[in-house]
Length: 315
Image (tube, rainbow, N blue to C red; front, side, top):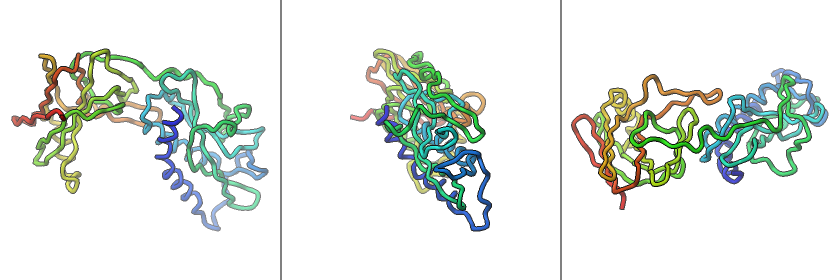
């Protein structure tokens, strides 16, 4: 889990450095900042609320990109680490809990000190990383800018619904994440006058917008359809035409395996298919996932209006 976190946290480093650069662009006439009552190396920490808000945003962008199943409470956020009001250069963000772990976990957030004027310091979050042994001292106190204190060992449930299974056939909505997806079939279709590449993948697990996570039962297989504009130079126009076809329910899917056939419509569920994850809204993709009782010479077909397109298995 730590190595996977380490790989994924690199994705947000550029964002973090961008936030730090913006914070650094201050003029000589800018006020020194709002005092916090906290100190860093003896200097007054200013704009502590803004520092944590930037760290929170970094954290919210980071964890959804991980190729892991994690449970993240709605109030998961970032904290300073305080030794009786004196802050450390490292804070933490979390908590979260990974699949198969026994307790809550944290990631480390690095703060870079910047001095707007003598005697004060602003702590700018510049990166996230796995917690380094011996760097984060759990004997100290987690604090927010308003003085709220946090717990080092909160109760965090296992990832929601893991493991769960799905009945055979199409699902009502598409997954927002797929784990270990293998490309098994490919083809092309024309939608609204634009050519799209169809990819059918076989994931080892999926997660939906409500964070519910599923894996195939023994002998089951998941297959998921995805569409990508073929001409990248006209991707915007192609995407708009495709979205219109999705809303109209014009794209039909058919999957056969082991003598059984299932049909579905590549469309979003009733409503906008939006679910809330913490402070973020996640929109469900159209329903392109099928659950097969077993992988038995499957065939895949996409129909757009009256035109049918076979999607062929890869050799």
